[in-house]
Image: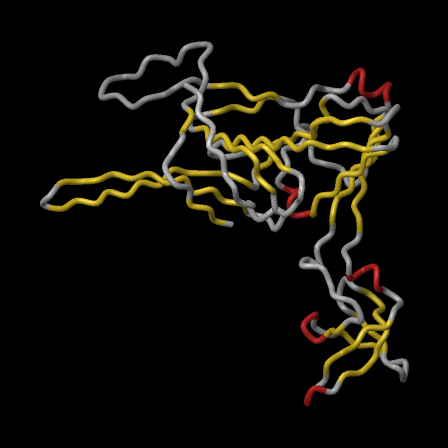
Length: 264
């Protein structure tokens, strides 16, 4: 029987759109509704989150697109290069300087002298984002028409493991189970439904490292390899004897544990 565990929490990935997650022990399938009123759809992921995406797994379902352009965007601090920021000196005194390079925090003072500082010494006229030093990947889909669809991809940044607690006393024993769900990035998901799967699952597909920039037109899409598919390895149970091979077609075990324990 298939069970769905509904979680009314944010897995510390933070978007307003409700997302469905299918969490396996070593990876997660993310399915997020997207829509656009124009002919372009822009999707942005922090670089840390993009690094966990399984190459070739990102797909746009129900929404046709003509081409897609992937680009590495600079971090927030890099957008301030050539502008005035403030350096906090000893005694609480601040000094206006010009940010020359965000990469190594090279600045120039009013006397024309160059030196490097630490990020904790900097002050700004506007509040910085929560990850000012983190770059992001932007994927822009060019569409023939406006519409709605599902953005899906596989990521290794979210995983889960069962955790069991046995409490024993003279009165008897009680076994409880929790689901430890881990999100290793700072990208929050607003979770609508979550399915927890246990068992060996193989991801099939041709993988190649993600390029900093990718452009895919309609002609290339016709010959491109399909997005990786999830292959169920069957329900494998321990045995005192040599186990039989798993059936050729079988869904993996689906866990629906007691209260969930969320860790990020």
